[in-house]
Length: 313
Ligand SMILES: Nc1ncnc2c1ncn2[C@@H]1O[C@H](COP(=O)(O)OP(=O)(O)OP(=O)(O)O)[C@@H](O)[C@H]1O
Ligand SMILES: [Mg+2]
Image 1 (cartoon, protein in one colour):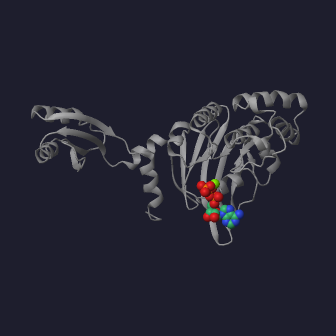
Image 2 (cartoon, helix red, strand yellow; image 1 turned 90 degrees about the vertical axis):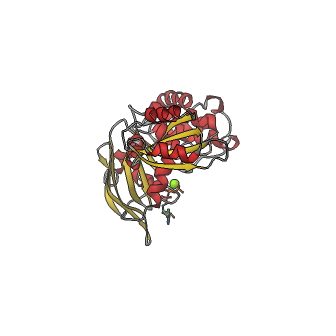
Image 3 (cartoon, rainbow, N blue to C red; image 1 turned 45 degrees about the horizontal axis):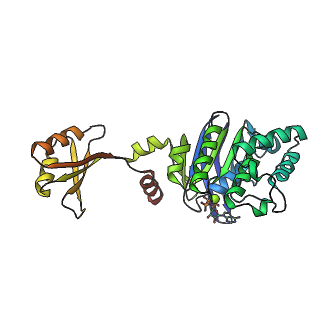
């Protein structure tokens, strides 16, 4: 549904987007993750036809976004980073205005407005002045605007920014519901958001793709060993020696927790579950087993590893 090949955008000598390629199949929700200045907004603006790239090709719904811009744009709904809203208008008049520009007749507009207002939960705000709406509601009006034409492709630049926690949960649900029928690219800084909403993630850093994979695979890939955290009440040196003697355990690190118990991070060969051996070992020696749990590499750690890695490594 979306293909991006060797896309590049230079601002003077700065390469904001530097040879990015990826594809998004129909119905997928793709997360765009990267630090400030990574090139997320630039890529999205190019994809929505807002500005030309310096090089490369992009297609949306089979149309070249530059050569067949009009057809391509007809298939795209775009929530920009800052939504250009008119404070004097109400969401209803604004959405009518947007619909008119897109060539929708008044019956269609009315039907679509009531549909998107329900989806974005702005029904109660439709007739207030946009200038008097809270930031979160303005963001939702922006989302409603993107959905208005019922586009095949939605490009959402930080859709949950400025929303309160409850609104974030609701908006994520709205986005998840869009998947399947619509193809969605969304950018975010919020890492858990990616694992909650997206099927695949593109991590971009300094204009380049650092990784593309499912959130689960990224977590697996970055982890050389599986890790288990154990909290034990017992003599720490003896506990450590006992843990180290367990087959498939490759590392034991003690974490100071300043209490009467000691906490160990036990690394083991990938795919080997050592939890039962650990439990048996501890209990047999008469020590107290307080906690035993596998620790997953968080997306935060993966992200930090990827974006701080030296180029070329
Ligand atoms: N109009 C412009 N003129 C010059 N440089 C620009 C312009 N727009 C963006 N840049 C530069 O391009 C790079 C990428 O910016 P972009 O806005 O795409 O990042 P981003 O990933 O969206 O960041 P953020 O998370 O802060 O929104 C940055 O170095 C930025 O300074
Ligand atoms: Mg941005």
